[in-house]
Image: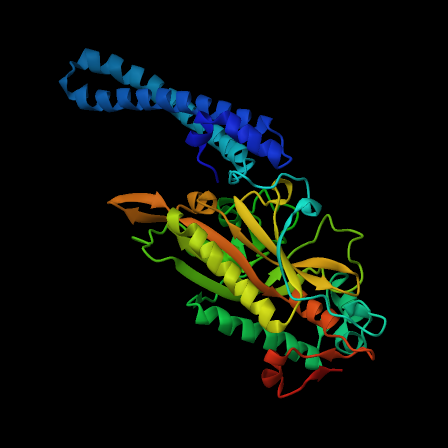
Length: 421
């Protein structure tokens, strides 16, 4: 979440931010006005509480007649305090909702745009593979048809999912294990994390309301609802809720390999064929906490890892800088990596590298020590791999008869197999 005090002092800056992101700039005024009302009511409540404290100190000095009148006045005051406390609690709820609508401040110079079509290309690697046969999208390849079963999934779980078996399931496992080792070589600590989180954590980290409608809700009982994670990012960052990570002289690097869940609402009609957009998928996430001055260094480290993964696999891919209108609320800077899908003659996003400054940690109350003072740590989130990478490999490494060549770096882990067929 944003710092409401900073917003109150810089309302126009936040109005401009909302406009750049395609949001309603009036949200900034609403939050600022609610904050002013909250400050006034909080000050008045504190004044009444002070009167009550003063009374408790002086009650013993009063005569019996004075005490009787004072006790009556104090009863009236106590009832007034209760009403004010209730009103203040209601106001705090409204203020929290208003704050949740305000995105992080993007850095100066961010590309201005409305959607991913406005994301400028900043670098590319490799060459588009050439073929002497008609190239197919991955879902029309014989290897895909043999090992990926969407029809059976539809019988047991409806749409947007798949069973995977045999060499293709092994290929996914090998790919993920290989990526994990690269990440470990860069000193990221592996973590086992929960796949469900409570509403408070999802709100504090910024997924609610930003991802509202994309999250699966799990009703535990009448009073308790959990959310299936859309990424292990929420669990990794949630681990540091209300924790002080001390001096943080070196960035704190963590990673997790989990199943993730998304409703994919709003994508009706998009990518109906194949498994590019599914409700359940595997993902390796790399996250970090650091001091503000180390954020760019960690961002570059995440970029280095992404680029190492995709260059070693031999993929043709590119990096695009995410524009203002395509940026999630939590990030102030983001670069996406897109792999070439020759069967569709287009680039597709396969991973993203984002910096969130103190937007997540302010909500989570994750701090560090600097000169005997506590400050909010800065966080970074980066996708290392999903099986979208596997789909890009299938398209770029396909053969004329619908088989898939295994990238050379993965062949030893596939038992020496050079083909999936």
